[in-house]
Image (cartoon, rainbow, N blue to C red; front, top):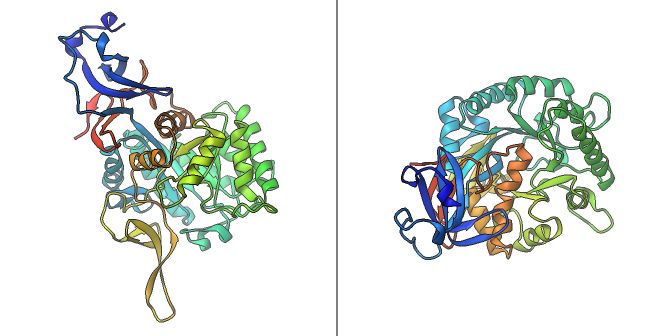
Length: 415
């Protein structure tokens, strides 16, 4: 009961329609005490002298969002960062829009670049700027390279994984790998085993593998994680399902079918870049119908242009042109005329992705869960991701149509 709490005069009380992992509580209050959620319940249960004024109609209170796949924002990209200020600039762009826990993603690059950038992001993680590190490559399929440079993609190398993990100082969360690439899933001292031993999660992506190859890799990763003393959790992930993968065909189901089946069995979690550009609304709705909000996480795959106007930006070694809010690799015709090629990451914030997912017909509770509680579980964090007592007081106050109003992290309002 709220009356069992310490003096409410010293607490922060936020009122609105509160989204919990299982329901929306109309006209409810979140009580924050000492950087933690202390109580969540009906406004009617709060003593009148402490009850905040009723907010604007439809005001929602969401948990702070958790993004497992983000390359940057605010004009700064993690793959191109040269100092902590660059990392902070990108992370702050998403923090101001409701992402209170963010994993910084790199792209395929030469070994020395990967090690240097990983060390910088480890410093940022130690400082609390980011929650961990994700490497998208370099053990990927050149056939499904997307916006990444195929010449930097290499065969699986367990020793390189160990070098990266050492540079990450315990902050390596995951690495995107293509299971058909030699050395990735060959059993023995392969990339999958090295990742799990380092406390990181394998993530299936940028792959041209058959369904059978993916099934075998998922089973191996699941078995390795089940017996690993340092595992963040029991399930590997799939990097931006559908994007950067062999398309699903009824006679050649490829990685998509295998990943969906594994997620439905509880052996895998699939990422969805549900920003309205990467996936059709019906695709997003169908996947969440199939695997539920515990089998899928919403991510941004955002790059430096998130929160910025149209123009040219960098994604590692690649020039990206953003036009009409869509980022594409800048390519040129034979006569030198520039044009947009493959989609090159996203430009949305995670709250934008949640809003688009709800607009696709997914229930609000499910969309928010897939952007908060479920990715927190994947990350191995039990202190964030939900508005329940005992968790860190990360929350987002939004309008009825899920536009950000205020953001709090650890009980303090973000400027």
